[in-house]
Image (cartoon, rainbow, N blue to C red):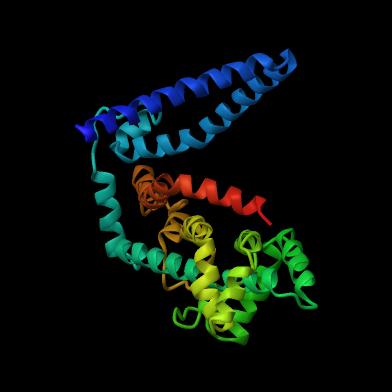
Length: 311
């Protein structure tokens, strides 16, 4: 009986909250001037058009990946009259007989994305913690340099990095040695973690020092758990970025093709694969990160916004 009452109370509370929020929205809308309402309507239309331009290509790719080739050539915008998996079958057969196996490509995408994301977060959390919590002469300069690096085009550093990896260090196409290029402590992750660590009171660390903990133990056991939500959101965001990255495998690990690289190399190779089969590999490549983003979108939005405003 108590459980049933709690369920009814919870349901009534949700309904009340919805009514209250609608009344609040309606009251705030009436307070706005005519020009403000027009501006908001224009913004709504613009964002709806923008959302359509993002979602329609995905919808188009999905429906055509399940069409026979003849039906795709007849009308690529129509809903499939016959749903078929022959494009996916063609893709798997083609990849198995070529130099790149699709299962190997999936595995390469998984391990590269995971390793690069973890290494990047470890490096970023270490540097962000030191720069934000320890005062030394170069701390302000390092923070300013990180912000400056964000405005420098990435293309400008590719040539130097390529020469460094292949000729100076000679670690190209060697997965066990290539990890230093992912162990970067600066960038977007650094800025968010810097703000997150700034908001954590230093009294936590001082209490740990009194109990006999060292600096590294204090960082791992006390300070790092305080920014765990930000780390979780950054892991998802960086994993998605690493999954979509084909340049790293293309430049530094050419023998270890990823799904993103397979999509890149097959886009203009009509002799090896039909367009619906190519769209099938596109769907396979985006499905995991789409599921990941939908599953953790609340965590991403809440913690990236919070991390950017704190400090």
